[in-house]
Length: 324
Ligand SMILES: [Zn+2]
Image 1 (tube, rainbow, N blue to C red):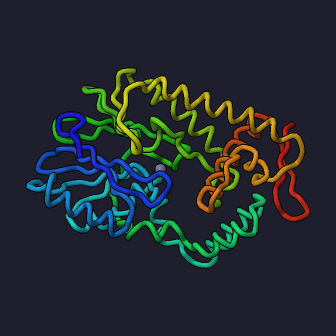
Image 2 (cartoon, rainbow, N blue to C red):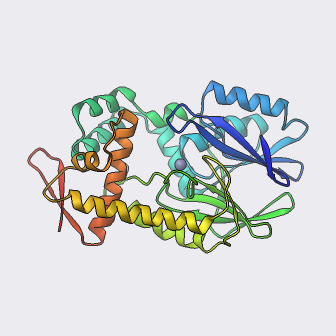
Image 3 (cartoon, rainbow, N blue to C red):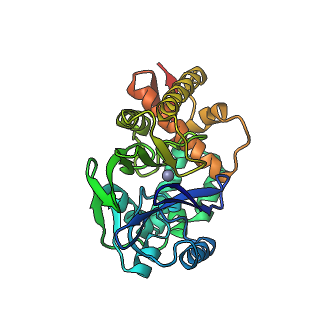
């Protein structure tokens, strides 16, 4: 735990993935703490929260929970924390709906639809078997999602302690991701929209197979790029940093390079999986294969929207893409 600005505490929780931690924030508020994001729903994280409430956060109750977006590492313990303190969950509408939906949607039909999506992407049988074995993975990593919430709107200002934070919406990584910007002190709680070392995951998911999330992502970075250059960025992974404009420019260049590489790989009809193997040359485990397919499809989606690629359905039911 570290104080990165007056009354802004940087907390860190472990994650059972290659990306092995998440940053959370505790903000001094009237009468207690406002927490931003929760960590994943597992005993380790619950135990660490217990230690924080008994230690560094002791003496002030928790008065509000803000969750930036629905992903399990951010929303996993939303129900547990709001229940424990009798507080409201503040979230954007699309993020709350998404969390509620995925936490409830656990039946065999959901899995069948996922399997169909990955089969159409040309995923190998081993991967598809793994999807079946894993079952509803979101619901496993996220506890109960509160049935009621307080809506955060883009552009709205939220008073937390002595500060005013403006909600800035990011798209593409998640449906309506909330970032929080404090104009007076140039602080940005960026969630996963701008990260210092990794490019935020921008994927097509089974529930919106024809989405173009990369266009959404790059477009929504525009208003974030308009924030002041000296802003201290508080990201959900790795360390707080300055250099917001340079980092957003790097992300833009990174995706344009990926699009060039993608187009060069699409010299004949190929499935998303075949193209992903050209884009991601290292061996991919189960978890990484899903992300590689999703990220490849998001780049294909933007290339198609720009008129640079077309697709056709193969006899095996899988989509095949080539540059046009
Ligand atoms: Zn995320």
